[in-house]
Amino acid sequence: MSMGNPIMSLLANNTLTGENFPKWKSNINIVLVSENNRFVLTEECPPVPPANATRAVRELYDRWIASNNKAKAYMLASMSDALRSKMEPKECAFEIMESLQEMFGQQSEQARHEATRKYTNARMILGTHVRDHVMQMTNYFSEAEMHGAVIDEGTQVSIILNSLSSDFIPFTSNYIMNKLNYGMTQLLNELQTFEAILGLVKNKAEANIVNKPNSSKGLKRKMAKGGKSGEAVSANPILESRERLSSNAIIRKKLKLHNPGSYILSEKKKNDHLITPLILFGWWCNCSVKRWFNMPRKEPVGARTMAIIIT
Image (cartoon, rainbow, N blue to C red; front, top):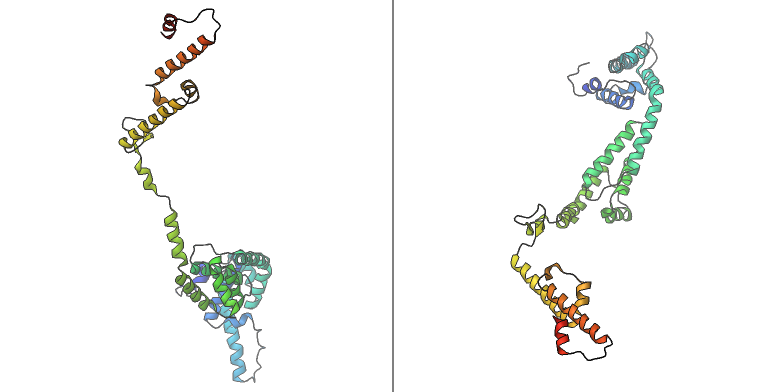
């Protein structure tokens, strides 16, 4: 067997060990089909022609024997030593294949179930290209068929349409209502055309760029010179001074409308350190005078006494 042929190299790179039986079986079928020898796996050996048999009958028998020997050589050469020692006594290639199917067929059933579950539960993710999704579904179909599943092209198209995202609902509805019948190649082309016309992937990419947070906003606030690391201050000192003046004006307005003492007790401002002593003094005087006049006295309060209280 010449391994320089790319088709023959499939057998050399995938030696049968047991777990890879579905893949090995697929490679054997590819090699036998390429050389027109796969019929020995499906047709029984013709009877040995008698001495007086016609030339056509003898050629048919000889062709089957030659193809069987070649298929058996391919199969034995591409399996492990332990399996080769068990299969070598068998005369026909289809006997070897049947024996291997009995040994590893149960594993193939489980693998087929897993492969079927993959394409049944697969759903297209929003924002991905429809071509990538269709190719992924095709791989799932191939994996299931490699394990013995039979999926016709119409069923594959229906499964793919059912797995598309919500953006392709108009396409699916049009396909069903108009009773279209696409093959896999035509379906992929039509889906790509629909995607390009609506600009589905492009629109999603632009939306992601618009919604991306602008990191340049953080540059508007700079680090204070001589301050702690991470302490941010206003970028414009003039605006900061104006804000302080406006806050002082609001404080003065409140002092005219409310009792200054209650204001000091309820709202303490760190920026009011210049006017706090005066407010406290006025509040103390107000309270002292009220307390003095409310006290019962036998004689009126004189000017000298008021001066002493105030001072």
